[in-house]
Image 1 (spheres, rainbow, N blue to C red):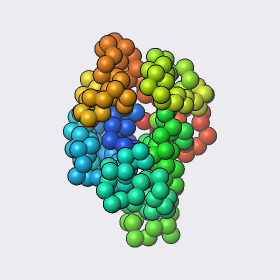
Image 2: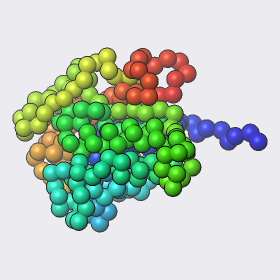
Image 3: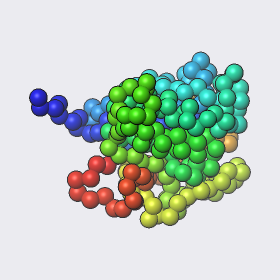
Length: 260
């Protein structure tokens, strides 16, 4: 039997630490994939499904065309009340988190998985770091028949990417973050495999960021910082997304390579 043709663009699964990470870091790529007709979904590691942040996440994913929220329901490292009665993500056993992610990967069968980089995405948030660790382990384990046999039939995505920020791409965002006491952990430009201009989906990306209303209303979170900027400055910050491919040594994309 001839296998069915692949979608116009590879199916994409994002795995991120908090509600709003998906929109800030990969909103343009998520929207672009969804617009192409490719299956697009997001797993979020923290916040309870009945929390206000989960409701905001649902609105953001609707804007991006990325389906319904898939929340692991762990508590944010800095906000224990984000998931009453549940451990903080950074305290949960990595093996436990990996097994749940493997279940999602095998159920959704994405071709491409996108997550945080190893440094915690500019600010070094511990939930970003733990999400990266668990996502990388799950990417490899999901394809192994003997690992987590109760989590579904084996499936290994074709590519794994980390959303990141190169030194040359920090620009005006760096001073804005340091001004509110946040770190700026960028990576050497050579670590970036793919740079994506998401200008064609900029309005969707910004609307998705604004859907995280509680964060946009505050001064310190990135949605709030962006909301207080002149439109031209804000657009210059969010119109470009950078990714490092992790399932082989970083190198410039060649013709025929599967990219995001």
